[in-house]
Length: 438
Image (cartoon, rainbow, N blue to C red; front, side, top):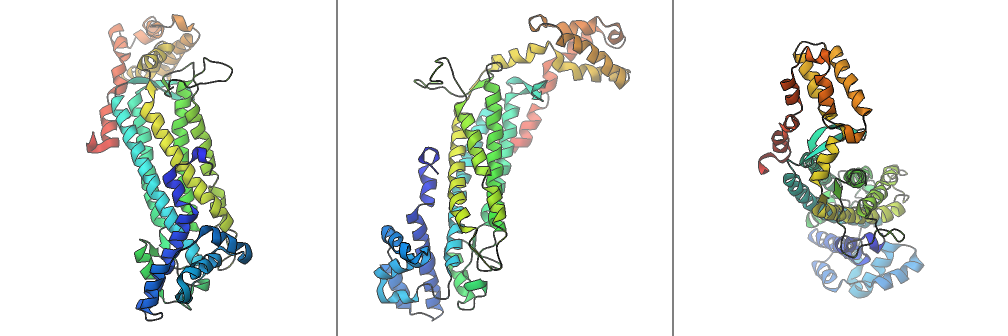
């Protein structure tokens, strides 16, 4: 991933140095286990830990000849360890190292992403509570529906990212396996104790049954989870982009001093961060199809998955880490315009209360069909009224409709336009989302 969309902590997980460090730890722990079994001298295992070093440039140079990264690493490692290096990698195959390392890297990446989600959850919760009673209009099909609060809207996203947190915890568990079972996974030349020992040392669990690799359905589940999180990011980003449109302008990304919106139009203040998040979400989701296709490999192993994972694993996790941090920044600094929300809500001249009128008519004895006809026929007249003339027009139309007045009096109609009806259960919603925390 390019530096522009990368953060140091996540990038380090996928660095060459970190990868080779993990390779060495796996090999050295395996030697300790072999020493406990009496297969290699305990002194040799100790020397391997003490002398074990590597040179990244040298490994890359050796690989030009060997065309095999693990062999290049082991060759370079032997140059530092000396004679005792002959005990390294006994009974093991390259995939034992590569797959177990990938498990550790994905595990570490998950920990970073879980931290990111936790920070975002805190921001969403704080802003939701701040705007618990900030009245705005709910929309369906992009059209005014009924009033809600901006806090309820944010609480919905909080609940979604809480689900994402649980999904990622499950995905982390799914990929936290270790395979040190040798060629085709039969433990023919290595004791299963070595796998158990290394798993314990590296906070992994032994793979139930490996072929020569860890089954890729685990990884497919992991990358699918990242994609779902990315889609949640895009959903929230898209909401903010819509609400920032000039014709709406209920919220706005923070526009810092000195920031420029357009090279041609100095007046512009664009939702560039949320637009960027939309694009980054697409990139994370692009890892899913390759990850799913990696599940199908030939027999006990081929390497058609290898090149894919070398790209999608760092790219997807680095991108998602950046996107979560950027989204948190957007939410933390989001500018909210309650007055504009109220102004927009009133643009339809009270039509947003139509369901209350409909229900009241049925409660008074009118059939649902005739009630719907009375409410809708008057509502259509409001749609045809110029926006600047709509204030109270719907309410007045109802009061002047003889059919409506057979069932409702003017006082009752006035009460039906009380916005508090739509907010009566906001506390209940918040209690369910945040439970005893609020």
